[in-house]
Amino acid sequence: MNEVIKAMKERRSIRKFKSEMPKKEALDQIIEAGLYAANGMGKQSPMILAVTNKDIRDKLSVSNCKIGGWGDGFDPFYGAPAVLIVLVPKDAPTGVYDGSLVMGNLMLAAHSVGLGSIWIHRAKEEFETEEYRQLLKDHGITGEWIGIGHCAVGYTDGDSPEAAPRKESRVFWVE
Image 1 (cartoon, rainbow, N blue to C red):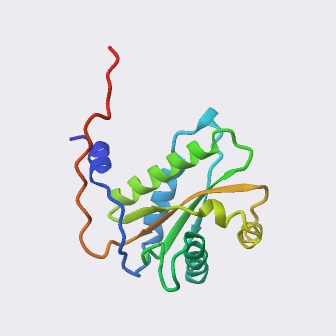
Image 2 (image 1 turned 90 degrees about the horizontal axis):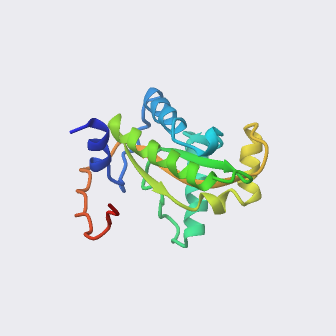
Image 3 (image 1 turned 120 degrees about the vertical axis):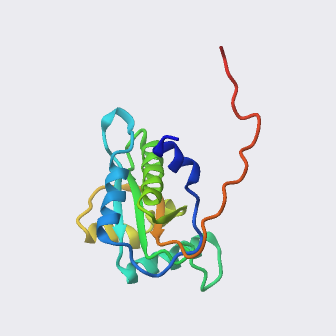
């Protein structure tokens, strides 16, 4: 089977990570794959904010937890030590689609280098707050951005889940 298709079929969302930080080289490969995602009109508008600072990662977790309505102590990133946040310019007409393709590439690339990943939502709500707009400014990022998602990345703690059987009647041929 083709290796790309094999990765697509085998990659699963991971909900338990080891605390060990992945090697920077692996994260760089994942990020590079994200930057090669297809995008509208070749604009390459999405950006990735790679968070490996534990204090900022933990702050993001607390904020994400509050937005999601979970109780104190829940980690919506499931212990993943690295969080790759995809953002798009507010005025990008195909931004949500472009950012979603970046997220898909990030997750497939993580799988292909032996790491687990999961797409976590609520980046939109986080980056609507002054606190996270300031985080961007503090890192030299100007303009208005929309959060598309967090790709939580790390070493899987345990076995990867099996794929659920695919539902029937989801393809209709027009020949």
